Each structure stands twice: as C-alpha cells, then as structure tokens.
Length: 125
Figure (tube, rainbow, N blue to C red):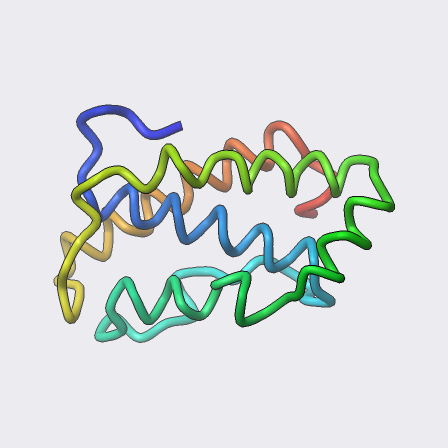
C-alpha cells in the first residue's frame, strides 16, 4: 500500500507493478514486466500502457484465471484491488524521467512487488 507522503513517481512504480502482475498472471509471460526493460526516456504513460490489461489480456483470460482459482487468482485479485489506492492525484505528467524520478519509480515498483512476493512467494520464483 502506498504511504500518504509517497511521490507520484513512487506511486507510478507501484501502479506499474500492479498492472505487470495482472498481465503476468493472465498471460503466458514467464515473469512480470520490469521498469528495467524500458528506456529512461519512456514516460510513465508509455510504461503503464505497456502493462495495460486492455491491451495484453482479455476478459476471457481473466475469467479463465478466476476459474482456476487458487493462489494465482488470489494474487490477481489482490493486484486488481490495489489499483484504486494507486490512482491518487499526483501521478507524474512528465515526458521523461530524470535519474531521481526514475529511482523513485523503480523504488515504488520494488516495494509493490515485495508485497506481492511476500504474500504469494511461489508465483514469482
């Protein structure tokens, strides 16, 4: 969960992680997408768009995941339910990240992924 005083860049990293986990669980990806896979010049909206559930997995895939139940569905549900808390005002409106902003974005991603890994360790090995 984001802290109240987290920067928009850190929250953007958390949001990126939640969307990456949803994509990973509902697709055949072998690991969640990471901020390290992007060029620092890629802005937050490019990054989030890459993990956007509308573009990368369908309703049918999510329904199939729900039908399987178990840990994967619980993790997907957790990631999906975390999104509203991450969409607080203040997400960055920037075209690129500078070094400090990119570090905050990655720190948010790492913090959110750590929460998912702690709750669902087998899914992310």
